[in-house]
Length: 415
Image (cartoon, rainbow, N blue to C red):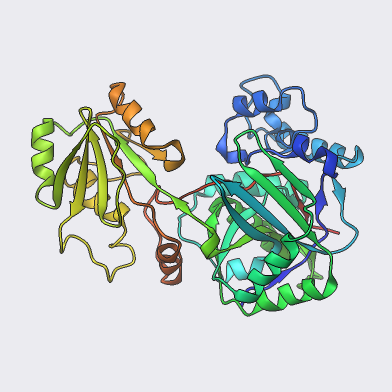
């Protein structure tokens, strides 16, 4: 069962939230963070991307950079830019994109739930990325940024969301990327207790986005438990910061592919090779978006094509085999284009669907790439099915938008 708890959030005062809040550390590089922070000393980038306080080109993994994060985190609290709540609470964080709003509970998730598999993953993690975030959590003794979870829909939790969000939000603003951010504080003790009870009856939580951050947060908590001879199990380090959304609130965006060459084939030969496993239809110069599962969009030589996988080319009884990312990786990228390792092959690149089909067209028309392939998005049901069966999705399968805004709330590992 999903063991969660309320916590004393460390948050910016209402009038400073837009100055403090930032994009997550892993969606921009050091120079982009430097430019976004500008002369704003209150920007969270000074804590999550502290290399911006050094000369350009500074190694972001240098010991003095991690030390700078600690120095800045302490200064934010001393200056009153981050203030800790006086009691343990839950919170609701909502995001609006393209007229659609998703509502999540801000919780302290349990380290043991991750270590024992009740918080389920669907992607592999890399140890070097885990270690970087572990250092950041360890040295600050806090989860500065939340991780992004999903849970199966629950009617009573949905009602709590509606009741709480009928009130005035603590924070309510639109970030520079056009996404709306809304944040409510849950102060009623009975509601707080009931949220804990309801989550305790949910068998599993699912990592939607942020596998490396989740692993890092849980591993540091586990490390602290092992190093504490008086460990009791109720210490704050046994929990880490997460925002958990009902699965039906979330929308996975397509994650598309562009390839530099046709593996020695002419365009005509490539299209002919596709006919073996797909029904190929010329759609013309207007953008064509995949219409459903097992339908793909191809852009080549200024024209769009529909590719529909033929019967028998996928296994709907196999949670991995029926994914369109598997179908396209096996039948197109591997069998025709000779791309066997999506993680390391330099001939392929990946484009998040948030950038639109126009970005695929642009990269092919520029001559940088030869062909583009757009996929129908994975569903939340597919994601949870794969996690439940202990499977791992192929690389570059899911893309979630909007990303969680960092700096709205922080979880300290000691009261």
